[in-house]
Structure formats: structure tokens, C-alpha cells
Length: 474
Image (cartoon, rainbow, N blue to C red):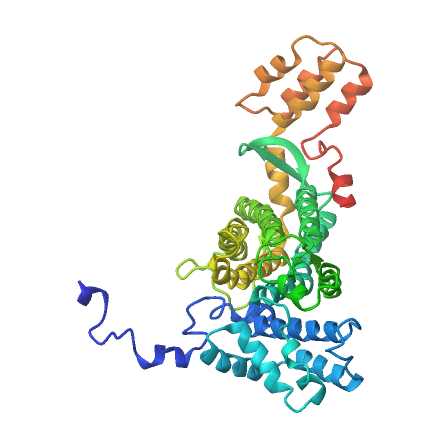
């Protein structure tokens, strides 16, 4: 069997595939391979380097906060020069610095302790810092550093990458809503011809849903804690019983732009993270719905797609222009939501005061965000290729005069005509109707002439209610 599946010289450990020769072509994940360029901005936030950089930031800011507290006499206020050097360590933290931290971790076998040791080595020539190096990690458990770092990573990536990317998608749907507001379209419920709308109104529906869901993402306040081993400031109070450490920790966390969580076990319980991931999955679900509808509109001919010179739609059918962007988006949103939902279901659960199941799971936040960013890019590219096809839209409308059975029977109801629904059902259900036959039916109705003339002038393309106004108001 092996001979049928693999050539004789197949060797899965071939030198070109060894991890030391990792390239976009040999990467295990498509996020680091085929799609690496599209998700590159996320690396600064969610890579191992990004996590270490945020740990450095938290440790440095904690030391600065201690030095700024007059009640902690053992940590004198830093000079302006030392504060600037501390800030530079954070702003200038490079990949080579992260490598140095990892080299220390190879000995300590503890990632956060390696950060502490690296900082002590980094400031060995700064006398002010060297006098207080034992306060770099004062009162902290590793989770104080980690949970705050993770919250910062999510806060920054949300503000700098996720929301701007989503906003571009929303604005394109809004632009399409305005552009196509007046273009009539036959709606379909259960896949069958239904009351007409406009193509722009359908784009407005998507934009409105996304705007509401986007607000949920933006409103989640990322929480962090800084209260020691099991959340009670035990170590802090053993050294400085006179200090209100809860108030101190609150000021510190809030100074980082995060919300303070006063009640925790050893770990911050990740409820805010779960809220964020759930909110993000909700947006993604709306976009999956939109991707599928747009795919269908393209299949029906309501939209054409702009072509690009040199592109191939099929290896054997030259005529094809496939809706690949919406297919790509749908697939990647599905992967993203699978990860996001696991994160939101797993992270708030920890045995007793701490277990480590969250640690490895948290390292996949960037993977979820990566598939989200990739999907948003695909959706936007697909939207930018769309061109409405008015002729095809008009053709469908003109073939479905039976949709006017709704307004006719509704006017009949107003004037007390018996069995209006049943009369129109007998006239149109399952067999359609020609314009002349419908007009003849209207002409025989005992209704005021003004209403009769209005119905006689109505066409499937004009029976669109407030669709234009609604589309333009989004």
C-alpha cells in the first residue's frame, strides 16, 4: 500500500522539511504559510515575542508604580533618566531581547521568572534599579503578570487591528446599501419568489446587524487582577500591612487601560475574555450568513464579479468567475468560531484555585484572531468585486407578477371584500399570473377608483415599500 501512496524515495524527515528551514512553504499552519502576509500585523500582539514584550511591560510598570508610592520607602522615586530608560526597555523591546529571555527560560524552565531575571541583567548598570531589583516581581504570582499581559494583548489587537478591519467591511456594506438603494430585487423566502425589496436594502440589513454586533465587541471591558497567589494580597500585607493593596492594585490596573477585577482565585477567571470571544463569534456568524447570501446572489446573476487580468476561475472551464472570496471567508470564519467558542467555554473553568489548562489554550488567541482577520480581508475583497446586474434583477421581477397578490388582497381587506386572501390564492398560488390577467382582476374590484388606479399602476419593481429610504438611512 505504501508503494501506491508514496514514491520510493519519499522521506518525511527530508532536510528541506526540517524546522530549522521553516519558510512560508514549510509552515504547518496556513496562517504562517500561505496567508502569512495577511495576518502579519497580529504577530506583534499574539506571538511568543508579543507575550514576552507585554510581560516586560507589566513588570516595568509595576516597579514604576511601587517607586511612585511614597508609603513604600524601600523603593525611592526614580530619576527622570531612569524612568526614561525603563520606558525605553518596553518601547524598544526587540526580538533579540525575547530570544535572550527564552535562553534564560531554558535554564529556569519558568517563563515569567525568566522575564524577571532578564530585567535584572538588563539594568545591572543602573544603580537606582539595582538597589530595588527584588521589587521587580514584588508580591506577584506569575498569573498577575500573565493575565494582565493577555488583557493588554487583546485590548491592543482589538483597537489596532480587529475593529478597524471590521469597520472597513461595515463601511463597504453601507456604501453598497446607498449605491444600490433604488435597485429593485425579487426577494425569496423559503427560496420562493416573495415580496420585492431592493438590493441596497438587503446590504443595509447586513450593515445594521454588523453595527450592532460591533458595539458588543467594543463594549467588553478587558479585566485584569493583581492580587497575588490566591487573590487575597497575602504576601503584600505580610510586608506592608498598613497599605490598602486592593486600592493600589486597582489604580495600577486602571492605569494600563484595563478594568480591575477584585474577586479572583490565583487566575483571573477570564469571563471578560469569554464575553469578547462570544461577541466576536456573533459578528462572524452574521458574516457567514452574508457570505452565503452573496454567493447565492452571484449564482442567480444578481451580481457580476469584476475580473482581474491573468486570473483563472477553473483549470478546465475558461468562462468561470468563481465567488472564491466569499467561500474563503466562510471557511475561515468557521474555523475562527470553532476556536473562539472553545476559548469562551474552556477559559472560565479552572479546578479549585488554579490549574494550567488555560495556559496552553490562551496561546491560541492569535490563531483565532488570525482566521478572523483573514476572513474579513476575503469578505472585503469579494465586496469590492461586486457589480450589480440590473437586467437580471428586472428579468426575475417581470416573471413574478404574482407577488402583487399581496398588495391587492390587502387593499381588498381594507374595503371589506369577502375572502380576499382566498380569491388571490386561487388566482395565483403555484401558477403565477400574467400582468393582463392581474389587471383584469383589479379592474373588477369594488374599491375606490384612486386605490384601483394605484394598484393598476403597480409593478413588481415598484412594489418595494420603504426599502429605498431604509437603505439610504443606514
